[in-house]
Length: 326
Image 1 (cartoon, helix red, strand yellow):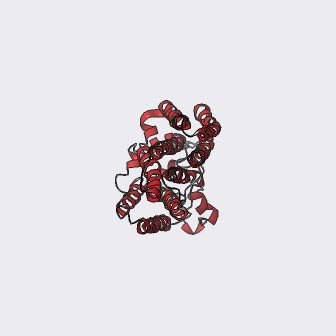
Image 2: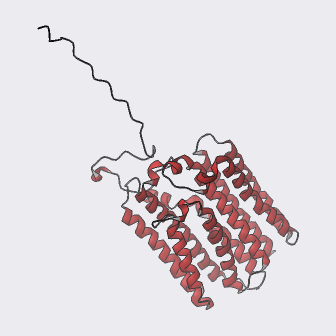
Image 3: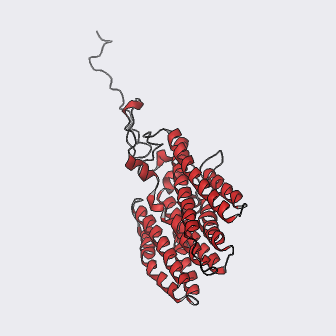
């Protein structure tokens, strides 16, 4: 018939939509039973071991500064300070995994998938693990308080745990408003270092203050490297870190300042404690990290810069402790 055409109309081929989310995250089907459960290695990875040296540095510096005031080495108190610091660091890392995962922020990450976002662990389980480490920190802090009879330390510990939670948790996490570096400087620099010195010596010599600033700046540098790696993904997720707010170039300059400034402090301390000159040896991995931050082409390269900066931090703390003890 004339009204009938033997040719069929071709339907336009739909455009292929770009894949969204974390390209490293395994594709998950609608059936939760098909998702692989997190292994012990996954849980250890979620603790972000590269960041743990930042928890050790202030304990080394604070203990060394305390020995300038008292001759006795209070190794039990120093050990419990280390437990508090490391447990808080791990707790923060698991809380970040939980909070960013349930918000969907980690769906935009480039790096390895997190436990919550990948659905390899239940959010509630990740949260309970984070709270368990906070409890360990609280119990160790309580033991220090009882031993030293400095009961006001309970309030300091409570504030530290609340600050760790609200970094990415709660309705208005301050880590989403460019305040993460401030938190890190205050708690993993000033509070951790000065607190370690106080509970051992009941005094705060100026060396502890100088060391606390150095430790805090290096910790901030690690956070900057991490946020620079995730700048595009954080911007897409509306996570306004300091790096997102000031951009790549300003972040590179700030990172460089945060890495180099502690060595200016060490050079000043070396005028009174000559062994502190040896801290300049630890500048080598720091300079390598700075080079990576300025020349990287792939975000994954910044993971190396993060690790090198953490290594710089703990070595810096060890040499300052040696200088104070010498």
